[in-house]
Image (tube, rainbow, N blue to C red; front, side):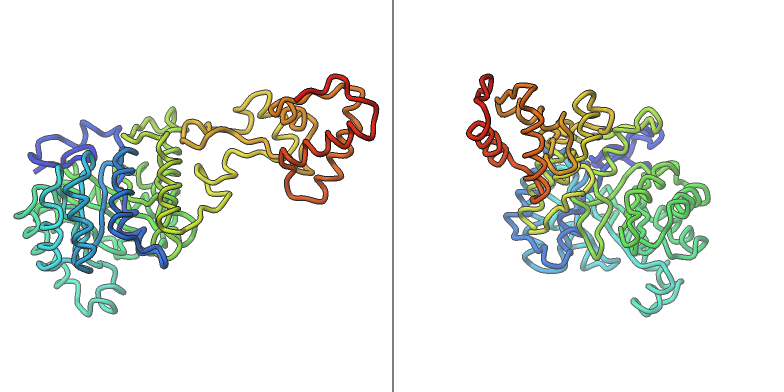
Length: 413
């Protein structure tokens, strides 16, 4: 048994992971883990709309929901499996036959069906949550993965809370899952506990110590409780993981999941160093972000990397001068590359004259050099009393100067 590559595990299992070692896949769980954000519950039609957009974005796998959780979610997952083409479609299942049956029935009509099975493996999960012991978890893992493999050619297994598990025991659980037929092993930092070096060591140890891992696709699923989800995902990639699970805009349980847009643009911007590739259409990141924000009601913070409104906006005079002369002085990627429109020069009290002249030129106004100082002083007065000077206010400033000073002969609109 070998793992299929790409976001399209299906049919035969002949392709070898090593042959695609430069490809990093993206497993989008916006519709499952992301929807578990308090207040982000989605109507089935919203889930379908987002799923179609995720397909346009080019994600390799869509985790469409948790089919056993409710009849409504089951139907939403089934509709996505039937209608959305391109990515593999999966649903989450506890290590129980009933859950596994629900996932299979929901995704069986997908072009590329996948069953995702999980069980807790840290001692706190085993004892406090599940009321089990380590031996029982090993047995349930083997039984659940083998059963899922009977139904579906591609099974992903996730040892929940791997980031806090005993590493030797974690390797034992993964070994059982691989022997039972799992073709994808996902290593979740469920509570966002790991530091990047620890995440890298976790991935490296599992890959080194568990027999057959050279034939298995390794994935990472990192939460952002300490603000390390993107860093931990990249650390996992550096250690050999070739699939990243995450959500658009970094939404998800508690502080959220790794933000897909952050991870993919880190791979793109640092490609000369990382030498990795992906299947995503980065120009769809902006539209996808806006759609997810609109449908979930979760506002994207202005300073959110890649997709925030300030990600390509410049208000400091020093920065504005640099960007206006050469964009790369302060931008390591372009707004156009991620579907975010274009860079913005924001006029504030911290702006410089270069930015003011640039904005005047953009709205079709030219001011004689001898009157620029008066305009500049008036601009600063207005800017000091407001957060931002919009075009309307700028036009008013120019109009007042035209009335109270000698005619601006070369002013044109």
